[in-house]
Image (tube, rainbow, N blue to C red; front, side, top):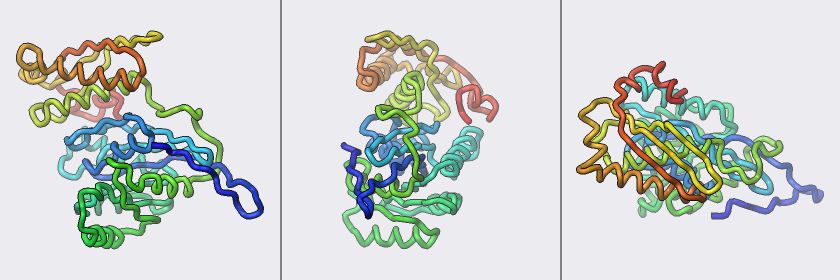
Amino acid sequence: MSTSSTPVEQPGGAPPAHRSGHVAIVGRPNVGKSTLLNRVVGQKLSITSDRPQTTRHRIAGIVTRPDAQLVFIDSPGYQTRKSNALNRVLNRTAVQVATDADVVVLVCDARAWTPADERFAKLLPTDRPVLLAVNKIDAVPDKARLLELVKKATACREFDEVVPISARTGRQVSLLLDLCAARLPEGPALYDADSLTDRSERFLAAELIREKLFRQLGDELPYDSTVEIEMFEELPKLRRIHAAILVEREGQKPIVLGARGERIKRIASDARHDLEKLFGCKVYLELFVKVKSGWAATEQSLRAYGYE
Protein backbone atom coordinates (compact mmCIF):
# COMPACT_ATOMS: atom_id res chain seq x y z
CA MET A 1 0.00 0.00 0.00
CA SER A 2 1.38 3.40 -0.95
CA THR A 3 1.50 5.93 1.87
CA SER A 4 2.70 8.80 -0.30
CA SER A 5 0.65 11.83 -1.19
CA THR A 6 1.26 15.05 -3.10
CA PRO A 7 1.27 18.24 -1.00
CA VAL A 8 -1.58 20.63 -1.76
CA GLU A 9 -0.51 24.22 -2.27
CA GLN A 10 -1.72 26.83 0.18
CA PRO A 11 -3.32 30.14 -0.88
CA GLY A 12 -0.75 32.32 -2.61
CA GLY A 13 1.02 29.34 -4.19
CA ALA A 14 3.23 28.53 -1.18
CA PRO A 15 3.65 24.79 -0.53
CA PRO A 16 2.31 23.57 2.81
CA ALA A 17 4.74 23.29 5.68
CA HIS A 18 6.24 19.88 6.33
CA ARG A 19 4.85 18.13 9.40
CA SER A 20 6.31 15.43 11.60
CA GLY A 21 5.62 13.80 14.93
CA HIS A 22 4.44 10.78 16.88
CA VAL A 23 1.05 9.11 16.53
CA ALA A 24 0.08 6.71 19.33
CA ILE A 25 -1.99 3.65 18.41
CA VAL A 26 -3.79 2.61 21.59
CA GLY A 27 -6.76 0.58 22.75
CA ARG A 28 -7.77 -2.56 24.56
CA PRO A 29 -6.36 -5.99 23.56
CA ASN A 30 -7.28 -7.64 20.25
CA VAL A 31 -8.81 -4.62 18.52
CA GLY A 32 -6.24 -4.65 15.69
CA LYS A 33 -3.62 -2.09 16.77
CA SER A 34 -0.65 -4.11 15.50
CA THR A 35 -2.46 -4.96 12.27
CA LEU A 36 -3.02 -1.24 11.74
CA LEU A 37 0.66 -0.44 12.34
CA ASN A 38 1.74 -3.11 9.86
CA ARG A 39 -0.78 -1.82 7.33
CA VAL A 40 0.34 1.81 7.43
CA VAL A 41 4.02 0.88 7.19
CA GLY A 42 3.46 -1.77 4.51
CA GLN A 43 5.70 -4.21 6.37
CA LYS A 44 5.25 -6.67 9.23
CA LEU A 45 6.88 -5.00 12.22
CA SER A 46 4.46 -5.65 15.06
CA ILE A 47 3.43 -9.19 15.89
CA THR A 48 -0.17 -10.39 15.99
CA SER A 49 -2.08 -13.31 17.48
CA ASP A 50 -5.46 -14.05 19.02
CA ARG A 51 -4.01 -13.94 22.53
CA PRO A 52 -4.60 -10.72 24.47
CA GLN A 53 -1.64 -8.36 24.87
CA THR A 54 0.56 -10.08 22.32
CA THR A 55 2.24 -6.69 21.94
CA ARG A 56 4.35 -6.06 25.03
CA HIS A 57 6.69 -3.25 23.97
CA ARG A 58 6.23 0.06 22.26
CA ILE A 59 7.43 -0.16 18.65
CA ALA A 60 7.62 2.60 16.06
CA GLY A 61 6.52 2.26 12.45
CA ILE A 62 7.71 5.18 10.32
CA VAL A 63 5.69 6.49 7.36
CA THR A 64 7.50 9.08 5.24
CA ARG A 65 5.51 11.16 2.74
CA PRO A 66 6.41 14.30 0.79
CA ASP A 67 4.34 16.43 3.15
CA ALA A 68 4.90 14.67 6.48
CA GLN A 69 6.66 11.98 8.45
CA LEU A 70 4.37 10.07 10.81
CA VAL A 71 5.99 7.97 13.52
CA PHE A 72 3.27 5.52 14.57
CA ILE A 73 3.79 3.93 18.00
CA ASP A 74 2.13 0.58 18.64
CA SER A 75 1.38 -0.10 22.29
CA PRO A 76 0.26 -2.96 24.54
CA GLY A 77 -3.48 -3.45 24.88
CA TYR A 78 -4.92 -1.87 28.02
CA GLN A 79 -5.89 -4.80 30.23
CA THR A 80 -8.60 -4.51 32.89
CA ARG A 81 -9.08 -8.15 33.89
CA LYS A 82 -5.78 -9.04 35.54
CA SER A 83 -3.45 -7.17 37.86
CA ASN A 84 -0.06 -8.85 37.97
CA ALA A 85 3.36 -7.22 37.56
CA LEU A 86 3.45 -7.77 33.79
CA ASN A 87 0.01 -6.28 33.17
CA ARG A 88 0.71 -3.32 35.43
CA VAL A 89 3.84 -2.52 33.44
CA LEU A 90 2.05 -2.96 30.09
CA ASN A 91 -0.89 -0.79 31.15
CA ARG A 92 1.51 1.93 32.27
CA THR A 93 3.27 1.74 28.90
CA ALA A 94 -0.05 2.02 27.02
CA VAL A 95 -0.99 5.20 28.90
CA GLN A 96 2.52 6.66 28.58
CA VAL A 97 2.58 6.10 24.79
CA ALA A 98 -0.58 8.20 24.50
CA THR A 99 0.76 10.86 26.86
CA ASP A 100 3.99 11.26 24.90
CA ALA A 101 2.40 11.43 21.42
CA ASP A 102 1.40 14.44 19.32
CA VAL A 103 -1.72 12.67 18.05
CA VAL A 104 -3.58 9.69 19.56
CA VAL A 105 -5.52 7.07 17.61
CA LEU A 106 -7.82 5.06 19.86
CA VAL A 107 -8.70 1.80 18.09
CA CYS A 108 -11.90 -0.03 18.98
CA ASP A 109 -13.60 -3.11 17.57
CA ALA A 110 -16.61 -2.23 15.39
CA ARG A 111 -18.53 -5.14 16.88
CA ALA A 112 -18.78 -3.63 20.38
CA TRP A 113 -17.93 -0.58 22.48
CA THR A 114 -17.13 -2.12 25.86
CA PRO A 115 -16.70 -0.82 29.43
CA ALA A 116 -12.95 -1.43 28.95
CA ASP A 117 -12.97 0.86 25.90
CA GLU A 118 -14.78 3.54 27.90
CA ARG A 119 -12.45 3.23 30.87
CA PHE A 120 -9.34 3.59 28.74
CA ALA A 121 -10.79 6.39 26.61
CA LYS A 122 -11.21 8.49 29.74
CA LEU A 123 -7.52 8.05 30.57
CA LEU A 124 -6.37 9.59 27.29
CA PRO A 125 -5.02 13.15 27.16
CA THR A 126 -7.43 16.04 26.65
CA ASP A 127 -4.78 18.51 25.44
CA ARG A 128 -4.03 16.91 22.05
CA PRO A 129 -5.98 15.44 19.13
CA VAL A 130 -7.58 12.05 19.79
CA LEU A 131 -9.08 10.21 16.81
CA LEU A 132 -11.32 7.17 17.13
CA ALA A 133 -10.60 4.42 14.58
CA VAL A 134 -13.52 2.00 14.49
CA ASN A 135 -11.75 -1.10 13.17
CA LYS A 136 -13.05 -4.34 11.63
CA ILE A 137 -15.96 -2.66 9.84
CA ASP A 138 -15.88 -5.51 7.32
CA ALA A 139 -17.21 -7.72 10.14
CA VAL A 140 -20.28 -5.51 10.70
CA PRO A 141 -22.56 -5.38 7.63
CA ASP A 142 -25.31 -3.61 9.61
CA LYS A 143 -24.27 0.06 9.55
CA ALA A 144 -26.92 0.93 12.14
CA ARG A 145 -24.79 -0.99 14.65
CA LEU A 146 -21.81 1.19 13.75
CA LEU A 147 -23.83 4.34 14.33
CA GLU A 148 -24.93 3.04 17.73
CA LEU A 149 -21.31 2.28 18.67
CA VAL A 150 -20.19 5.75 17.63
CA LYS A 151 -22.99 7.27 19.68
CA LYS A 152 -21.83 5.38 22.79
CA ALA A 153 -18.17 6.25 22.20
CA THR A 154 -18.76 9.98 21.65
CA ALA A 155 -20.94 10.11 24.75
CA CYS A 156 -17.89 8.96 26.70
CA ARG A 157 -15.55 11.70 25.46
CA GLU A 158 -14.99 14.08 22.57
CA PHE A 159 -12.99 12.88 19.56
CA ASP A 160 -11.43 15.05 16.88
CA GLU A 161 -12.52 12.58 14.22
CA VAL A 162 -14.28 9.21 14.06
CA VAL A 163 -13.02 7.03 11.18
CA PRO A 164 -14.47 3.60 10.35
CA ILE A 165 -11.62 1.45 8.99
CA SER A 166 -10.53 -2.06 8.23
CA ALA A 167 -6.85 -2.52 9.09
CA ARG A 168 -7.02 -6.00 7.56
CA THR A 169 -8.12 -4.83 4.10
CA GLY A 170 -6.80 -1.27 4.23
CA ARG A 171 -10.22 0.33 3.81
CA GLN A 172 -10.12 4.04 4.76
CA VAL A 173 -6.65 3.66 6.32
CA SER A 174 -5.22 6.27 3.91
CA LEU A 175 -7.90 8.70 5.13
CA LEU A 176 -6.84 8.04 8.72
CA LEU A 177 -3.22 8.79 7.76
CA ASP A 178 -4.23 12.07 6.14
CA LEU A 179 -6.20 13.13 9.22
CA CYS A 180 -3.27 12.27 11.51
CA ALA A 181 -0.73 14.06 9.29
CA ALA A 182 -2.81 17.24 9.26
CA ARG A 183 -2.71 17.36 13.07
CA LEU A 184 1.04 16.90 13.51
CA PRO A 185 3.21 19.90 14.40
CA GLU A 186 5.25 21.57 11.68
CA GLY A 187 8.83 20.39 11.55
CA PRO A 188 11.48 18.40 9.68
CA ALA A 189 11.54 14.62 9.45
CA LEU A 190 12.70 12.83 12.59
CA TYR A 191 14.18 9.82 10.75
CA ASP A 192 15.84 9.09 7.41
CA ALA A 193 13.36 8.72 4.56
CA ASP A 194 14.07 4.98 4.18
CA SER A 195 13.64 4.16 7.90
CA LEU A 196 10.80 1.79 8.82
CA THR A 197 11.24 1.41 12.57
CA ASP A 198 13.33 2.49 15.54
CA ARG A 199 13.84 -1.10 16.68
CA SER A 200 16.88 -3.29 16.01
CA GLU A 201 16.87 -6.53 14.03
CA ARG A 202 17.67 -8.33 17.28
CA PHE A 203 14.48 -7.00 18.88
CA LEU A 204 12.37 -7.83 15.81
CA ALA A 205 13.74 -11.39 15.77
CA ALA A 206 12.67 -11.98 19.38
CA GLU A 207 9.20 -10.59 18.66
CA LEU A 208 8.62 -12.72 15.55
CA ILE A 209 9.69 -15.87 17.37
CA ARG A 210 7.33 -15.00 20.23
CA GLU A 211 4.49 -14.55 17.75
CA LYS A 212 5.01 -18.06 16.37
CA LEU A 213 5.23 -19.43 19.90
CA PHE A 214 1.85 -17.92 20.80
CA ARG A 215 0.24 -18.95 17.51
CA GLN A 216 1.45 -22.54 17.75
CA LEU A 217 0.63 -23.12 21.40
CA GLY A 218 -2.44 -20.96 22.00
CA ASP A 219 -3.63 -21.44 25.57
CA GLU A 220 -1.42 -24.48 26.16
CA LEU A 221 1.42 -22.28 27.37
CA PRO A 222 1.06 -19.65 30.11
CA TYR A 223 0.88 -16.02 29.02
CA ASP A 224 4.08 -15.09 30.83
CA SER A 225 6.39 -17.01 28.51
CA THR A 226 8.84 -15.02 26.42
CA VAL A 227 11.83 -15.19 24.07
CA GLU A 228 15.41 -14.13 24.81
CA ILE A 229 18.00 -13.66 22.03
CA GLU A 230 21.28 -15.11 23.27
CA MET A 231 23.32 -14.63 20.09
CA PHE A 232 22.67 -12.44 17.04
CA GLU A 233 25.34 -12.36 14.35
CA GLU A 234 24.88 -10.05 11.37
CA LEU A 235 26.75 -11.02 8.21
CA PRO A 236 26.39 -9.45 4.73
CA LYS A 237 23.95 -12.09 3.47
CA LEU A 238 23.14 -14.08 6.60
CA ARG A 239 21.83 -13.70 10.14
CA ARG A 240 22.79 -16.31 12.75
CA ILE A 241 20.40 -16.30 15.69
CA HIS A 242 20.35 -18.41 18.85
CA ALA A 243 17.22 -17.81 20.93
CA ALA A 244 15.82 -19.22 24.16
CA ILE A 245 12.13 -19.66 24.85
CA LEU A 246 11.68 -18.95 28.56
CA VAL A 247 9.11 -20.92 30.54
CA GLU A 248 8.27 -20.86 34.24
CA ARG A 249 8.48 -24.57 35.10
CA GLU A 250 10.32 -27.68 33.97
CA GLY A 251 7.01 -29.38 33.17
CA GLN A 252 6.30 -26.74 30.50
CA LYS A 253 9.33 -27.62 28.39
CA PRO A 254 7.69 -30.66 26.74
CA ILE A 255 4.75 -28.46 25.70
CA VAL A 256 7.07 -26.22 23.69
CA LEU A 257 9.22 -29.04 22.34
CA GLY A 258 6.35 -31.28 21.24
CA ALA A 259 6.64 -34.98 20.38
CA ARG A 260 10.18 -35.68 19.15
CA GLY A 261 10.82 -31.92 19.03
CA GLU A 262 8.37 -31.41 16.17
CA ARG A 263 6.63 -28.38 17.67
CA ILE A 264 9.74 -26.30 18.32
CA LYS A 265 10.97 -27.18 14.81
CA ARG A 266 7.72 -25.82 13.38
CA ILE A 267 8.01 -22.65 15.47
CA ALA A 268 11.57 -22.15 14.21
CA SER A 269 10.61 -22.83 10.59
CA ASP A 270 7.70 -20.36 10.65
CA ALA A 271 9.80 -17.70 12.38
CA ARG A 272 12.72 -18.16 9.99
CA HIS A 273 10.41 -17.68 7.00
CA ASP A 274 9.17 -14.30 8.30
CA LEU A 275 12.65 -13.20 9.38
CA GLU A 276 14.08 -13.87 5.94
CA LYS A 277 11.33 -11.75 4.39
CA LEU A 278 11.95 -8.94 6.89
CA PHE A 279 15.76 -8.95 6.73
CA GLY A 280 16.04 -9.75 3.02
CA CYS A 281 18.64 -12.47 3.54
CA LYS A 282 19.09 -16.05 4.73
CA VAL A 283 18.56 -16.73 8.42
CA TYR A 284 20.05 -19.55 10.50
CA LEU A 285 17.85 -19.88 13.59
CA GLU A 286 18.46 -22.20 16.53
CA LEU A 287 15.78 -22.40 19.22
CA PHE A 288 15.88 -24.08 22.61
CA VAL A 289 13.81 -23.96 25.81
CA LYS A 290 15.05 -22.63 29.13
CA VAL A 291 13.34 -22.62 32.54
CA LYS A 292 13.48 -19.14 34.08
CA SER A 293 11.12 -19.17 37.02
CA GLY A 294 9.91 -15.77 38.20
CA TRP A 295 11.23 -13.70 35.29
CA ALA A 296 7.93 -11.79 35.18
CA ALA A 297 7.10 -11.91 38.90
CA THR A 298 8.04 -8.33 39.77
CA GLU A 299 8.42 -5.03 37.96
CA GLN A 300 12.12 -5.04 38.90
CA SER A 301 12.72 -8.43 37.27
CA LEU A 302 10.81 -7.31 34.15
CA ARG A 303 13.18 -4.39 33.63
CA ALA A 304 15.99 -6.87 32.98
CA TYR A 305 14.05 -7.98 29.86
CA GLY A 306 13.47 -4.50 28.48
CA TYR A 307 10.09 -3.74 30.06
CA GLU A 308 9.72 -0.10 31.06
